[in-house]
Image (cartoon, rainbow, N blue to C red; front, side, top):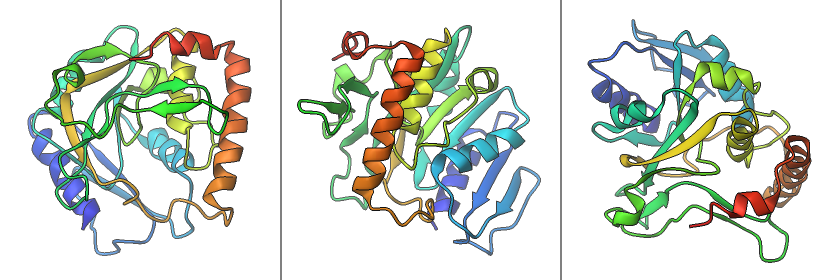
Length: 246
């Protein structure tokens, strides 16, 4: 049901655009049929987000790719607003994400850009998304450069995505979107947050994305180690990232 709502919102939002929807179904909706605007791959073993997104991006034909979780629903003019920001050296654009009506936090902001204050679980560190505020707060309806945005709803230039090699598949369902954005910055691309574009996102509704039996804490530890190594490779310091702090 979540996937079908997501697809329907894409069709409503992009009815005047040329587009193609690519779906990697991990075995949860076997009745979903291919269509003229819809290609489907079915893969029973679960795979992490980075692997799934890279697979779909490899098969995408367009110059612009919208990465969208199956539990997200686009609001009116969401993609249109994001497209206006995706030009020149802007490699990726994210939008404001709001919790849907079925969530305990219905109507509150879930994501409005990502700001990095250290790498958890380091003392005093935090990954800040400016969440749990009302969506009509003017300070969240801005358009600005940010260190990173979530890949739950992320519009990228295919050339930029390919330039940095897509998502690093050493991440397991965490930090891969932050790492992608930071790799874009390191390669000379910019990352933008478009606060006038909005979608709802349930969160944790995209199931079956990992076949690893490690606990969430073990994932977090591995992901933090990989991110630290990536920052060193890109010669990006935490002090530089903190200059973006809201």
